[in-house]
Image (tube, rainbow, N blue to C red; front, top):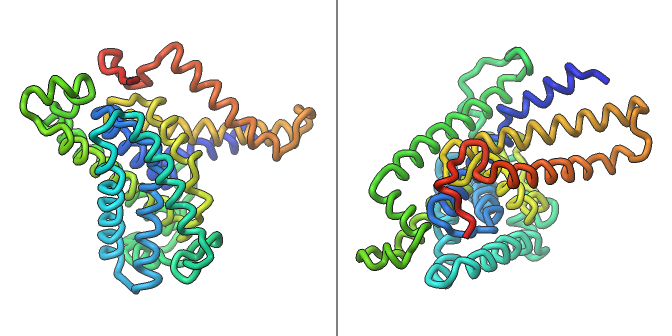
Length: 326
């Protein structure tokens, strides 16, 4: 096995655009769950809204890059209202049921054959990121970052993605430190007490749902840019569960926790895959095949998450005083 190559590949995931997309979407879950106590199990739906809103605006309506981003964000706001209006006055478990169902409804809608000309059905959409890469300030060539070499195109999407993550983290940090953020934390702990102080709990919950959804939408857009492709199979319920894994790994009620969790998640997945595939190819492991190893790595990550919840339930950066599991 080439351990150095496996390690460099795993380290490359730290700055990959997919990791950045997961970090943004998990940050949205931190706003929902970590700071407000909203059980959103449909963040994949917000990511799909971003991806399809962005792609359809460009391919169907020839919208410029920035207009397509705004359309995607507007779709996210509409989706948040659709989810929040009937559920935010009810118990948190109703929101979890509605969101996981709504995300699946979105996925099934975009795969229907009657919308093939618009959504691409099961084949998805391709070739819509030209406007983004036209903004690339890096000259053509290969850029060696030590543990990974990147083309100008790959470097640009990484720089843009992580700058966006940094900006969003800073904005969320400002929000949660503001009086608005303190109201959210109060709602998380005891919404009846906040309501007794004259605060409109429903309005604050809706605002949090929208803001967290917008972060998920930005993550959905970024998720499509490296391959300039949207595939409906990528937005199943497992995507939301992966995002929850990232959130819990780093810490639910933290700003940087989701970012660290996304990095750890993808580094561990890449490292375990590389080690398992290498061991099978070298003949060290004979009782499973390479296709089976792909599933085994998720089992290993699941076991690691279980151990984390037992020994450090607040996550890597979390504080036990701000644990939220209700």
